[in-house]
Image 1: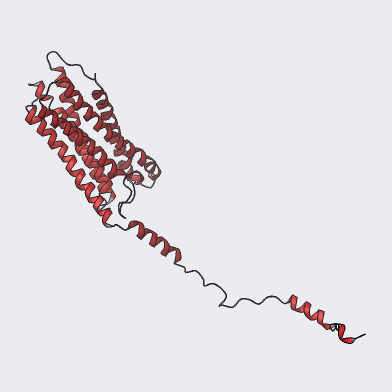
Image 2: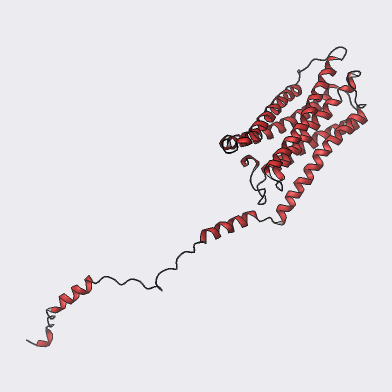
Length: 291
């Protein structure tokens, strides 16, 4: 047999060498093979970048903010001025019990001043004024609502006396306008009482009442906007009732219709101002989330 055709057997020490190689543990990776350790401030940088991105105010945001502030101010003051013009120029001005017809004129002016102008500014200040400390914003919010209270009370007494002093007396609380007004006044009083005690009086023990105040914020804010929309609906139904119940010149009807459209525009602008989403760093939190 040819010796070249047979493979030579491995030496007896070869399997042992192979086994030794298999048992040898793998070497630890070098420093070049391992990934670099994470930066200790990595997540802080990420969070800071996200906050800066969210809080950046571009030209569009500034334009929207200024547009809402200017437009809402013009509308809230303009609706009161237009009401005064209508009552003084077309309705003969004001009086008290000596002239029930003129006494009634106090009702639309004072109700719009209290429920629309003062309450509207109160809502917008709480939503848009972030340059002051939160406690000062709360006080301004309460101040404007407190200014609305005497307007609403005197306005209600004016229409009540005006109906009772007429010859013959006119019925009270017979129309949808009067029912809506009654509900709006009741909800306004409840909102003021709850807000005063929950968000001002309970601040004397702030840490103990934090949970309660946090739970009340979305309820108070939601019902506050509902109350404002009810006030607008009450004013519009009152204007409609006034137009139907009497004959007016065409020019006066145009003024009254314009007054109704301004009220609708106020409802739209205030709703957008309260629920708008692109806000700056100091105003990015919704009113329903603030304490």
